[in-house]
Length: 405
Image (cartoon, rainbow, N blue to C red; front, side, top):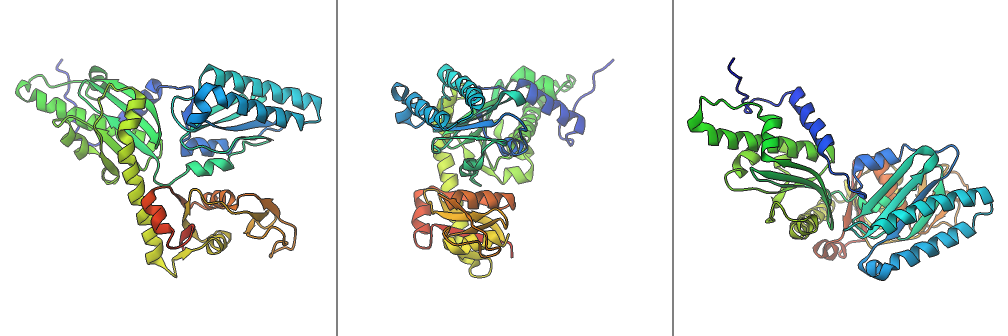
């Protein structure tokens, strides 16, 4: 019986999509340290312990911290101080046991890239998350019934989530990335790719076989790149591909993703991950700077009805649930207060809540709480880090926002 020909010019079927997703999960490389995705952060927000506390640890891993195990001194000091504050012997022993597990994991290996690490651990829940952070966050150790995730808002920049596709006909690799950190999530060889998507070739069309293969492989790779893009909620796609393969790959990307192609990168398809990170960083920086400047320009263009500048104005808009996008200089911090009864932010923690008259909780940095609330309102965050955007922002204020109404 003659084998049927699969024509990939047709729409990808649900069954084929499921096969690719299953292969993506089955083939996904599992590093010890994961990059925090939006889905993973949402999942952390659903975890709660009724008995043993969840240990949340943040540790900076700047280049200086990596020298001569300087991170270990900082870790031990953090642990010693926190354990000394626990009066309950059973609790102290239980937390010490969790921290010993974290220390062992750190000794076994730090993330090869990134500027920090976060752990969320609770043995009674079977909870173990070790996450590589693209930016340094202050050392912190918290014990609570839920994971302490507020510092992670600093990793939720609107334009800092990339999928990277290094493509060839014989070997293709897919990565997710934030600037300074890259994680490989899928590798496909040419034969495996053809077996996954192009099950049979019409051998009666030998003259067109090469073009047919390139066309099919380009569409298959576009499909896989799109699924990785969607699964990890990326904002931009970077790619490297041979000239013969590139037209088919770009042609078959969904229009919405094609519009989010951030650029091409020049990197060998077999390069180690750290070289991939180095090769794509200039392209990522350029995308980040362009989008940061554009966001600030949109705020200025939207004044005064749909845009505001200034800390007080942005805080008021967050309190009124009006923010659509919050832009803030990533280095900016300001103290303030928070009323847990009314869920209001205030700039002066010495005064009672203006709504209910109750005392407010002091916040050492009101910006993190403000960003957390903005995200809870489905707003997007623009953390301004590029020199071009910071120069523009200095003409206005360290915080600004686009408003929904």
